Length: 149
Ligand SMILES: [Zn+2]
Image (tube, rainbow, N blue to C red):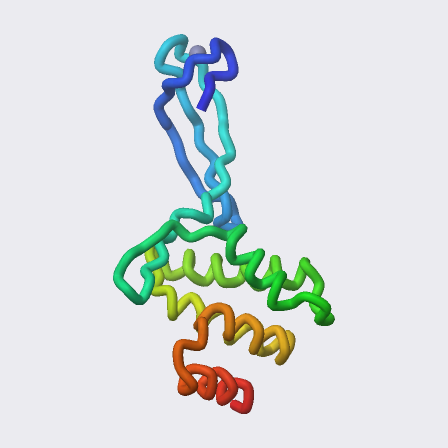
């Protein structure tokens, strides 16, 4: 964080508190060079989650990637980009409320699908087919079963 007075990049945090909705942090900082105090509002970054894949490897959660996948699944369906945004927001805040730092890929998929199924059946099946890659007939059947619950 650049000092607002002298431009120095090094500062220390003297006070830190989350915003009311928990999506950002307000920090009072003190410049280590000139002692100027300034306030920053830092949005909690969405990449603070690690997604653990079925093969055990992990990658940083990528909101844009998830949004792209959902937009493809919802193409030409009566779902607005705003609805997709709020679905993703909902998942992120749910993970945050549990103070999760990592999430299993399949759990993330389930979270998405359980929300998507309420929005649109076709989008749900499309997303499920992409997400699960339908490695087996059983997986496909499972996804369809979810629909009938
Ligand atoms: Zn300074």
